[in-house]
Image 1 (spheres, helix red, strand yellow):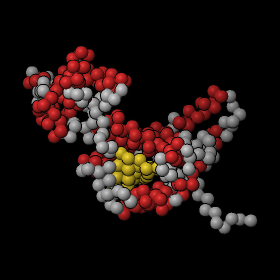
Image 2 (cartoon, helix red, strand yellow):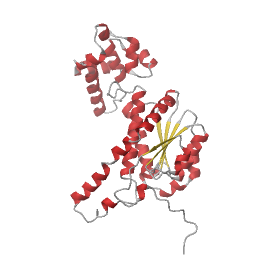
Image 3 (cartoon, rainbow, N blue to C red):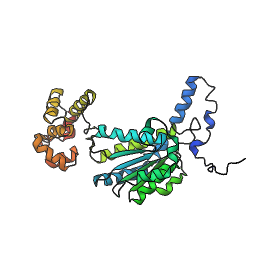
Image 4 (tube, rainbow, N blue to C red):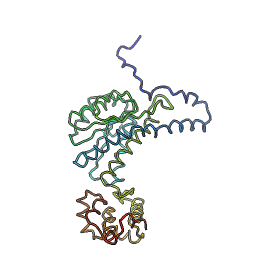
Length: 319
């Protein structure tokens, strides 16, 4: 007998059977891996096609964060875990304090480690999660299928609160488009293994969020050139990276960079500004604060010894 209570079967392209991998369980291991890799190779091109809308999202997000807002990721299952990972990595990578990116996972923190599949079907819990946003915030819904009820609830509540809403999905016909101001729809097509979207669709979401958070932080001045100058020195590896970055950017030796970093109490941005401008920390620190942590903007404001000698900071760093 047909179940009259069943939900309508609506398949997105991510859930259609892949004709290219039908024999994946019969081929040798090397061929199996080649099949997976061939499918994965399509993801970058699919993400590339979304860059114009992603650029608009980045620019708007920069405006919101500069005005005191926060980016909130909302997702369930693999999508939610990817959001948790990206939000967690922004802090040590770019030195953001307080965090500018926050992740909300259906089912709470425990569901990040232990799958709680039923949580994603509860739209009301999603509404509760999204109701904490303000008009200054950006809500990013993560749903490979494009129809997760929990994410729908979060986006609805975020929009009602006046926040900007974004959907990241691999379903070009995602029902959740109705609740998003911007839709980043990545056409990854059928997965190599039907029944889960943790492969190509998951990789696409990771690439989109990597690009989103990185581009936003670059636009906010958290890098100098292509160097992560907001990085904290909380362990030996990161402290070594700080020295390497300072040597590269300032064109100075290891000992001089270690001494300057120590003089600036481990603040890599301040140490770099001091070395490039010739200013003492107590002179450079107010300029860096006024520039909201952007070394380049602070350097333009204070000028410096290198510039007075006729060399730009970039040329000095390459010597």
